[in-house]
Image 1 (cartoon, rainbow, N blue to C red):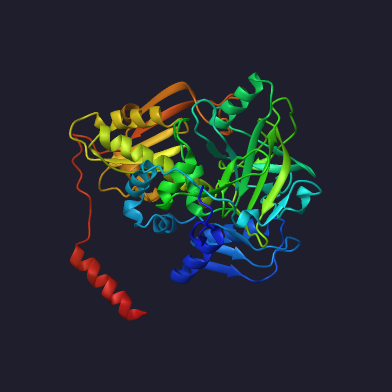
Image 2: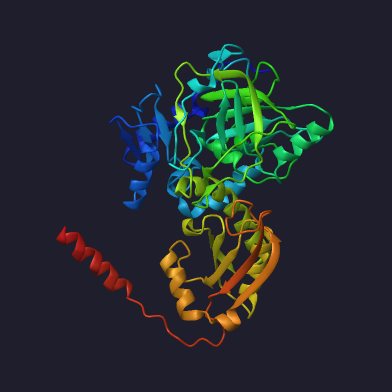
Length: 459
């Protein structure tokens, strides 16, 4: 075991300091007093309406006693910088790094061990904020539950919305088809609770790794090492020995009781709707670990750019790689904010008729969240909704270019789906097709360059 002190590069506060020093124009610091009741969400929402997505730091949140950092993942360019690339390389570099699995490096201690409480604590003293008027209570939106593995030996990281239930208990919702749910059912079969640790605040690349979709025999802590480019520094929690980031802000250790059920929700979900759908699980907290001066690292809830990007970038990266390996005609893939997790736009350079449909069917089959895929030609910018809608308006004929499949499993949080998440899926072929004879109107590069020069002189 490595007993050296953990480096500072793997904690959120060091990341924030370093990022602010190099990209200060991308960090907004709010010194004015704000309420812990919705003000933070309201500020980020207003920034979004203004077309701005800065990493936002609130230094004076009433009643919290700690600063709050949020909107970290709202900008794809910022995420690309974290990965050491530009926007065009984000999918490729994410996949390359995520395949370079590195075993965590275990330390004797780290910043998260500065304060350890195993009795006499009150979870009401945790820094928590309310995101929406419709939320049942203040929520932990950045709660990453860590469980050690079963027979496979691989641990699991996953996000779960969580709210206080009592001074020592947290109500949370698991994903009923996820690995943590499988581990909980395995524990229940053996008649015991499942030990877990909840990490609230860590390096953004650890947070990104926790949102990855990987096989159950892959430990996301190893993937985090790949994204970081070095082994993840971890310490063991005092009661159950669960390996958590040594540089985390706050860690809660305890057990999920498979027999207990508590009310949880509603909460503003990625669909933009307040959702009551929950597995209603109970986490009994037995240990609180934290830094002397922690920071609340929040994730903006609802259908925010941050919430969507955090889950979508790993998914897109996987889908892009799969599609391009299977279908060389695919030139670009994008999941738009406007479609939450349910829409995807794919650009193709068709070599033969029907290829766009084949690509769409592949996407609809591989990604269980998708309801609608729109295929366009390679000259259409799939990152702009208006371009895709233009392609639909001018290329698509509904009687021949729409395909639908019914009765497939989807997201249980989709308010239009059945109670068990069954959904239909649709592919829209908005490519021009072999019999299309229109010529797209265009402006020459010379004229565009001249326009930029004229406007530059007019400022």
